Length: 308
Image (tube, rainbow, N blue to C red; front, top):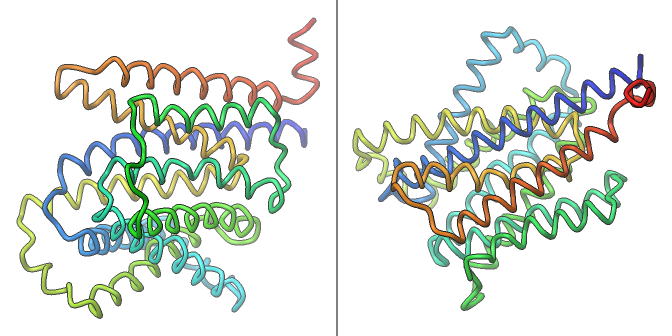
């Protein structure tokens, strides 16, 4: 019964991972289409603040406000660390760097998060990463270079994006550790609500608050849609991390590229050969990973029954 319970939790982790992948793919596409011409810090602060409001509404609707009573001083400090590392500093570094490097270089660096998470999971979480898993992780990252993309230069902006990627990787490890004694909803609160407070303070200190008045109605609508997607993303992402190996969860998330490419193809009416090859390779590697994980996570009694 214990093994079956563990198996069920891990399978829930796979489901959450797949939902996160789907939301992420749609969100990347939506951000490119709906939110344009805005200062990146202002855009991120407003969008994250919207998510923060949705998180509070979620907790009120599901009567989870009482969870705050269970938090010790140490737990509050953990939430503040999450807010700083994953909910504010990383966002500031990433979007400031992205403005200098462009989307292509930024994506190549950000996608390396799968490698950093796998490297950190070994010593910090004691996750078992087989040779096959390593090959899959490296293969997934290598698919980003199929279209011939490479770094023409590597400057301060690139280093800022790399720093943000490392911070988000560290955040993933921390969430895995903290989720054992802190509710996932409280961890999400730390990232999105407390993180938005830090982002808001930075926006004010940097003198960018006045730019909010120049946001058009269409841009506000775009922010609302992408904010709702970000809410769904972080809620499912944190839940996936809690119940499944972070190496697997981060690997599945790479599949968002397939979703984004598919939506682009639908709207544009065409897809390049390299994009098609990339999508097929990513889907194949992730499918193989999920099948392997599913077989490994089944209780031995279930495996024996299927072999009779």
